[in-house]
Amino acid sequence: MDKVMAVNAGSSSLKFKLYEMPEEKVLCSGNAERIGHEDAIFGIKWADQSEKKVLPILDHAAAVQLVVDALIEKKIIKSMDEIVAVGHRIVQGGKYFSHSELFNKDTEDKIESLIPLAPLHNKAHLVGFRAFKKILPNVTSVAVFDTAFHQSMEPQDYVFPIPYEYTEKYDCRRYGAHGTSHQYLSQEALKYLKDVKHPRIISCHIGSGASITAIKDGKCVATSMGLTPLGGIMMGTRTGDLDPSVMNYLCACTGKSVEEMYQIFNKKSGFLGVSEVSNDSRDVLAAVEAGDPKAILANKLFIRRIADFIGQYYVRLGGVDLIIFSAGIGENSYEIRESICREIAPALGLEIDYELNKGKRGVEVVLSKPESKVKVVVIPTDEEVMIARDTYSFYKK
Ligand code: AMP
Image (cartoon, rainbow, N blue to C red):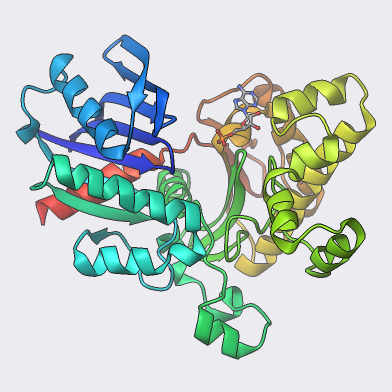
């Protein structure tokens, strides 16, 4: 029986999920956190059991060894030979990758060359890949890129209006992110669009990172994130799109450096920055309930930014057949879903069953009424299963 591991390596973490393929049955999932520390954490869930322990995990290779030892010890697999392939999530594939790719020297070199575009992520992904390679040298390894789905955009959708020399010389352009999620969602959504010849979908992946993508005939035509995941709609701690002169003006006002301000735009803005309460939408909504004016403003700003992008993509697609809500907020926060729908309903002719929406968390549900001009659905996203599917298809080739 073929087992495929989906891996998401961060700078100090390593998330994993083991699938039995092609059934897509999840055998176990887990996470090593605080890698590099004496008091690192290793957690694993399998069958109906789970375990968490604090122990030293000095590097990613040690984390991978812990994973494989746990798989055997907990009898999740009998031998390492059962793992036929490992798929690695890679945040930035630049202009090189429009689909997943087998890990070889060329793939590795290209991912390495893209480190300046995603310094924390790509570096960590390579560390994760090399750690697995050391422990499981003979398995098929596949790179699955967060940017690949967005490579179908036309130049007028991805080129920034800067001197073209910079676009060419430094590959400075829109790449987007969350591509694996948007692709998964658009494929899952097709069951709602059986009678539509050329499906037009707006996919809203709204979690602590958030992005909106316009999809026509299964291909991305536009996406809200930019060169990096800082662009687009407002997020938990990120600004989303800003007038670029905000950077200069605030550096002059505060005396902070460009790098310091960039960190503030990434880590101290968005819900957290405006509400001064939290980056977590649940805390912000609780403060809204309590009448906190800054939380109310942060929430209104979030909803307005999302509604504006949906309007923009409605025009870009020449109409829309289906809108998807997904990720932490999209799947769980029925309050925010309702506010967004109320904002866009008059222009788009939406008829929403707000009673049905209420209380729905983490489940797939059709929110629109049959008479609605546009279908609106909630679909829980699953990036790992996309990684497993792509990885398994390389193994079977
Ligand atoms: P993600 O990055 O996709 O994990 O999403 C994180 C965001 O989802 C946070 O802003 C959370 O407030 C929100 N979220 C997660 N679970 C819930 C829930 N049960 N109810 C409301 N919001 C939630």
